[in-house]
Image (tube, rainbow, N blue to C red):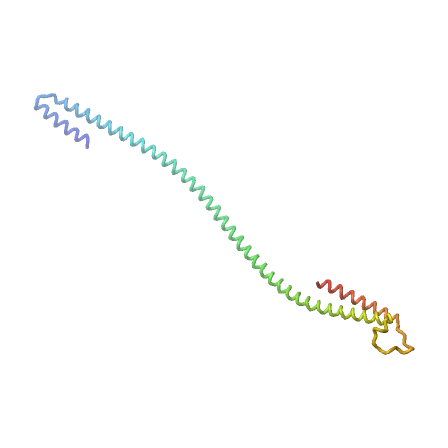
Length: 190
């Protein structure tokens, strides 16, 4: 379009110059010089603009590559975090199952402990009562066979009566063994 305009101007100037008697090419030369200067100026501006665009494109490409690299790194980290999250979820489910099992076992153990404690309380009371009875029996028998007449509030024994020391000793010995067994069992229960 500019060349067409230039050609039409040159033709117009040549016709006018030929009719006026002037050098028709002087005006054409001046128009061509002006046009060349204008085109050089535009080419310089375009070259500057192209250089700027090329520079910006290089910067943009470099930034794009950097961002893509960062995105890849972050994506890798996200994938690792997702995998770790899945592992942790599995561990949580496993641990929750183990915790539920422990809770059930604890409940069973508490029940057994409660039953055992009830049995202990009963057994302890019976052992203490039995031990007390054996100790009283031992005390009475020791006093009897030791001839503590003032302790026995009975009428005086007949002349033919004599305390049998052999049988008394074996009875006292048996009761001492029973007392020892009761004490051991009570200590075990406690």
